[in-house]
Image 1 (spheres, rainbow, N blue to C red):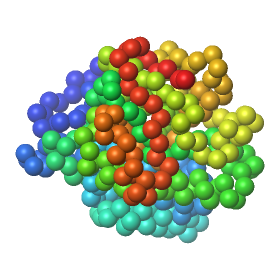
Image 2: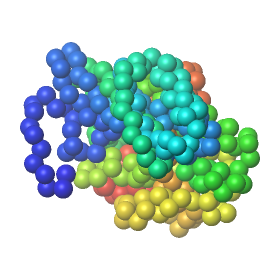
Image 3: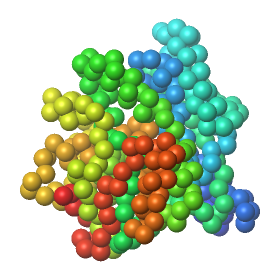
Image 4: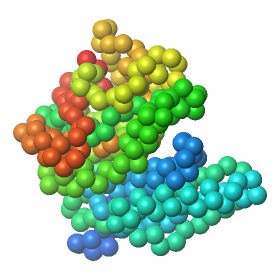
Length: 319
């Protein structure tokens, strides 16, 4: 971390050395706490929906590591005097609704005055130390399961451009405010190799994190990757956020797309997501059962999108 010498503590089970979704600290042989924090500026006009989305997004890192979120602290930046206090109340109410849905206790928080509204959570979760799921550990023979369709960055850019329908806005809002709780609960019953949630680095960026400096490669099936309806059309119209191109510039050396793959699809696969789904790696022998169990528990759009291979180590091949 920028050459800084970090304090050593043997009870830090997951810290800053890797690129995991959250940190983990061992309290005892039976209990560890997972800690994470996330906040951002509004991505939808409805303040209640913004609160829901920001809270669901913050909780997701706990779910991705196989844990159960327990407590949260509100993080708020608010332009008092420039924005009606009713807006802040609506944002906080939206966040609280998601916390109640997740069984999370709000125990405090911190607010500052700022020229731009921001909201999110610092979250603490519980997990058994021997059941931590990290974003590394994929091995040849694993299949990859994605639990939510992608395209939120593109859809939200189209919303800002004023061309998305009310139906599209409602659909993407529901998707982003949906918890990854059910997916995490199902995942916990299986011997998962690795897991992450798909957020700002996009599908390809987070996949690249999972195989960097490993002996594994990835083969993705472009036709199997679920997209939010309208994503392709909005992308063709140029509503691809700058973050997608930043992700592409950073990770393009690890991505190999077949000559028959539409370059627009690659841009979509780099699209930064907000409160995206879980990306789960699990051995072929149990992947089908996990996928079926996800569907039976309401994670209806979960799909097998690719496989881990022994060739092309550290590379993602799109077919």
